[in-house]
Amino acid sequence: MPMSKVWVGLLGLLVFSGCAGSRALCPREGGRAWSEVKSEHFRMHTDLSPEVAAKSAIELEKLRRALLLAWGTDFNPPGSLDVILLRNTSELAEFTQGRYIGFVSTTERGPLLVMSGEGYLLDNGPELQLQTHELAHYLSQHVLLRQPLWLAEGLAQYLETTHIKPSTGEAVLGRVNANSRNHVTRNGWLGIDELWEWDQKELLSDAESQQHYASAWLWVHYLMNMHPERFDAFQTRLARAEDPQRAFAQSFQGVSDLGGDLRTYLMSGRSAYLTLPLPAVSTQVAVRELGSAEVHANRGLMFLRAPGELTQAQRQEKARAELAQALTEDPTNVSAAVLATQLSSNRQEHLARARELVKAHPEDGRGWDLLAEMLSDQDEPQVLEQARESAARLLPHDVRMLTSLAQHYMMTLQPQKGLPSAKRAVELSPGNPFGLAVQAALFFQMDRCAEAVGFQRRAVDMLHEAYAPEFRKDLRERLQRYEAKCGTTVSKPGP
Image 1 (tube, rainbow, N blue to C red):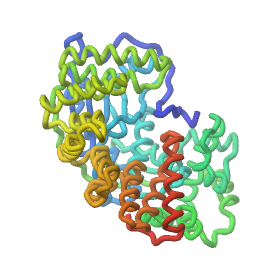
Image 2 (image 1 turned 90 degrees about the vertical axis):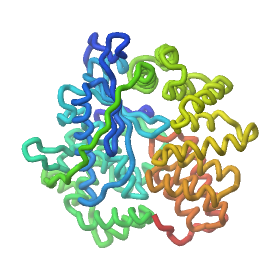
Image 3 (image 1 turned 180 degrees about the vertical axis):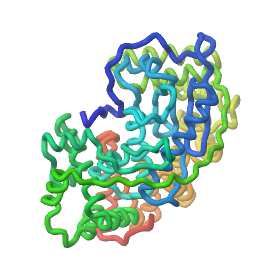
Image 4 (image 1 turned 90 degrees about the horizontal axis):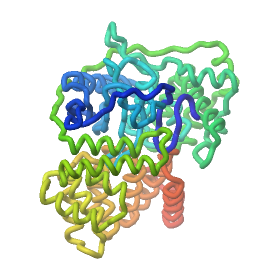
């Protein structure tokens, strides 16, 4: 178990406390009112009071802005993240059986952060460190267009200790990660050559995984502190999508004994951290009350995705009960319909529901996306294309909708029509291997070899441990096909 986290397709932070009686119910069942709070970069569903929820969203905006200081004061990429924020750990315990105080999963719309509040959201506790780790991963992919796994995980651990000083409002970056430092002090660490091989390893034991995580943090913290100019040069090369190992070799050329210096660095206990003024963030938020069906859909999603002691069958049973109640409350609730597709493989049922959704909610892109997912290419090709186009038009900042439209044009051999959507998807999420692979395939169809190979290499670089082995294998085989036709030495494409 790497540090205080577990990876099982989602990331959670373990605690040991009994389940209390408090539950995050809908108002019809005696629970508190739920709200959706939208800030510039977060979309939050919560049962906190609207006033506290709005403040929490702004605090998350501040944390995001603090992390971005790692790459300069002017860097502020687009994109939005989904958050479910429950009032306290007792409410979250229903879904995690009292063993976790937060977790991270992925939905059809991208990353989902699930956390609990205890008065103030950003109290610098362990649950915030978990969310900060994942937020750092998400943001770093907007900068470092190619990332070896050791750098991705080491940098996320370096940034997860970021906090905002209550007294001055300043951001503090680079504090020592105590879990990782203690591990390498007790058990030693891996050399940089061994960490480069991490990308190729499919299965690691808990002990091996922990050793890799801790070693990655140590190397990043050491290079940040002792070779800052060379490390900046390394990141600059990755931001230009250069080959990572070649970029590292060129950036650290002439340094004779990195390993020996690292040992001295750790044993000396020397390190520095940065205290920087926090740039202003937007305090504009939009708040609306959620209906009971939406609350039940959220509960079903948390049952389905949360870590804990329940078996998958038990989780599905609880999620189905929430789904049934959501559909009783509102048969055309889009969130419930999306959840239903994760609990049943009855395509005709989902197709019929999707047709009703686009009639009842023609302004909701998720309904059009669901309709497209349920249609086959042979059934109604014109309706399928219309559904894909409508979903992307109604949700122009949704990476999945844009990627799905681009993929549709890829599969129908219309690369010129698909390329604008693919480019926009990659602009919004430069580290998403799905979007990168679709853009690479479109370039390949257009005989633009340099771009095809370049973007496919970026896609393979971003295949970190959250992705299924089959998907990793497929993307690597595609890269081999592209290189077989185009050659392995191609000019480097732009970001």
